[in-house]
Amino acid sequence: MDALPEYAERVLEVAERIPPGRVMTYGDVAEWLDEGGPRQVGRVMALYGGGVPWWRVVRADGVLLPGHELRALRHYRAEGTPLREATAAAEGHTPRIDMKRARWDGGGTHI
Image (cartoon, rainbow, N blue to C red):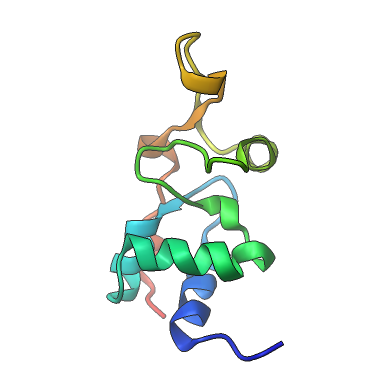
C-alpha cells in the first residue's frame, strides 16, 4: 500500500487514541490537530479509516453514520458508549450518541 498523506496519518492516530466508550467529532479532531476542518477529517475517515476505530469519530449532533448505523451501534453497545435511545418519531428509530456524556477532549496530550 502507498504511504498515507501525512495529514491522514495524523487524523488516524487521533482516532486510535480515543478510548473505548468515548467519541470525538470530526471538528474536534481537526481542532485538536490545529489543522483542517470537519470535512477534511471526514474525508480522511471515509478513505482511510477502516483500520482504526472509525465509529469513535462522529457527527457533532450524535447521529450515527448513515449506512453504517448497525455496525457502529454494535461497537457502541459493546464499549458502553452513552446513547440516547430514539423516540418513535425518530427516523429509522436508531439511537444517537449522548454527546454530553460520550465526548472526549483528547486528554490534553497533542500529537
